[in-house]
Amino acid sequence: MTTRRLPFTLEATATDSRARATRFTTLHGEMQTPIFMPVGTQATVKGLSTDSLKHVGSRMLLANTYHLMLRPGAEVFTKVGGIHPFMNWDGPVLTDSGGFQIFSLPHSRSMTEAGAKFASYVDGKIHLLSPEESIRVQRAIGSDVMMVLDQCIPSTSDHRTARAAMELTHRWAKRSLAAREDSPQALFGIIQGACFEDLRMESVTALTEMPFDGYAIGGLAVGETKNQREDFTEITAALLPPEFPRYLMGVGTPLDILEAVHRGVDLFDCILPSALAKRGTAFTARGKVQMRRSAYKFSEAPLDPECPCETCRTYSRAYLHHLTKTEEVLGWQLLSLHNLTFYHRMMAEMREVIFGGSFRPYLETKRKEWSGSDEELSPAEERESLDSSP
Ligand SMILES: [Zn+2]
Image 1 (cartoon, rainbow, N blue to C red):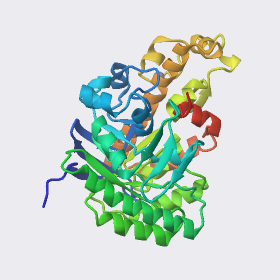
Image 2: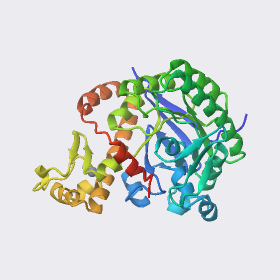
Image 3: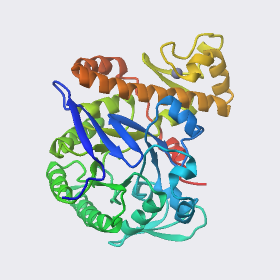
Image 4: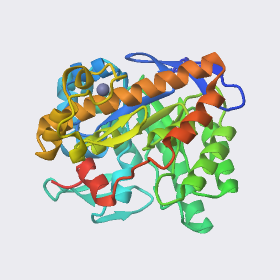
């Protein structure tokens, strides 16, 4: 029996729900779940210093391998000793494999058993992102949790296409594990199988036979309906062994996250708090507010009187309205601070009600309060906030 890279404790399970509270230990400290990870695409959560991130309650960040391998490049991370000293962040970091960007964003690429070949948007140079190359870069970045390279396909793909992508993902998973060698960094497998129950089951069986430290529910949030996403999150989470962390990549709105926690998911990341802040939208306990609305022009009230964040303690709605109206950087920054505070407080609240035995009534209340108020990003906004092009 080898020592686990991510010692894990299942602390509590909710009543009338699969929601759970867990803790696990990374190379940079112990994390409590459910947890939300802000997205630090380019080794920065847009507009926020690492000090600010700590203040709003961020504990673990996500960084994008695809962008970091192109700029500044793996050699910079090797030279400075990894992403933690590089960006002055001493908490854990999770890196994706780079696969999502390669497969879902529009640029030229070709796919073989070896990996995905693509031209860099920085200098046009051709790169091969193979499972081994992805792990090599993630090892250089020095993240606490690495992800395997998987083949991302639209979740609406037919059975045959979904099976082929899943089987390739399993072969790549094995190669990724081999490429990790004796690195102390944890590695998550990614369950595939689109919207097919038999494939999800097969994928869980194949990947849980490999020595991963956690599992992501992959192949969702790419074209399926909200109901399908919830159903397949539920089906997959229920198949996964309880003693490993579970991660739903790229999800989502407060209600999406709550529904996934209810189905047994522990980790989340999403660009939404920051992307909506850029658009002038703020989350509050009573739903979302659009600060650009002229209704706030003369309002001396804080954005959310119940929020302890710097934005709400220091500035009026009138000032935030003015900043967002004039598209000042400070407006984006102050709303990002507030939105991340909202997300982190929401996760802490979920953890509390799981322990307190009142998750189910909490879920019912929030479903009523939050339904119909979810705001999605357009594909163009999503691309922009991912910085897919220079
Ligand atoms: Zn606030």
